[in-house]
Amino acid sequence: MAGRRTTSWVAPLLVVAVLLGVGGWVRNRPGATAPAATSTPSVLVANATVVRAIDGDTVELDIDGKRERVRLIGVNTPETVDPRRPVECYGPEAKAYTKALLHPGTPVLLERDVEPRDDYGRLLGYVRRAADGLFVNLELVWQGYAEPLTIEPNTAHAPEFLDAARAAERAGRGLWSACAG
Image 1 (cartoon, rainbow, N blue to C red):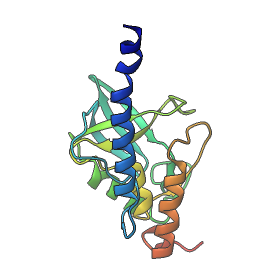
Image 2 (cartoon, rainbow, N blue to C red):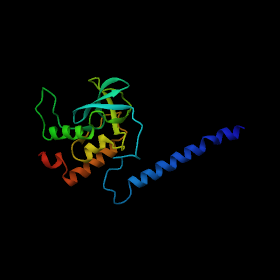
Image 3 (cartoon, helix red, strand yellow):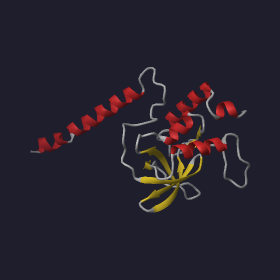
Image 4 (cartoon, rainbow, N blue to C red):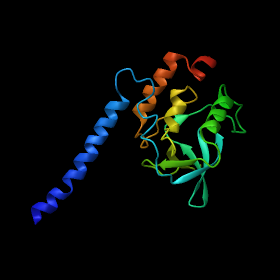
């Protein structure tokens, strides 16, 4: 009986390992044009709904009936709403792109990392659209609307963001061609 218990968890673990391995190969295959984690397999289970995009890297989500400001982890878009600073180059475009990706009412999957909140009390998270799995944080960097911003210990996707930024810069997408320096 003990032998059965020990092996009962092995089969599901192997299935998960194989699926993850195959998924990684498909996303990272030679000739792939999008970043590795831009999207995931079709429909995800949503745990939040978009209320609005506040700026390029901050959104307001409805989580179980409670509105929360969520700062997208690992990315930094040019400033548009800080009253102490001028609107930065490509800030309005980044905000508009985030709004286009996350219309009010859009179901999303909010994923967390190590630290739950930033110094301003905002939730920290990775956001994926539930309908198609689009990884919004990564998409912003890939399209040139954001730069990577790595703040320890929330670094789960830092290498992906760095790769996407290098690709966007090489291609001259977004802020990489529009903003000097």
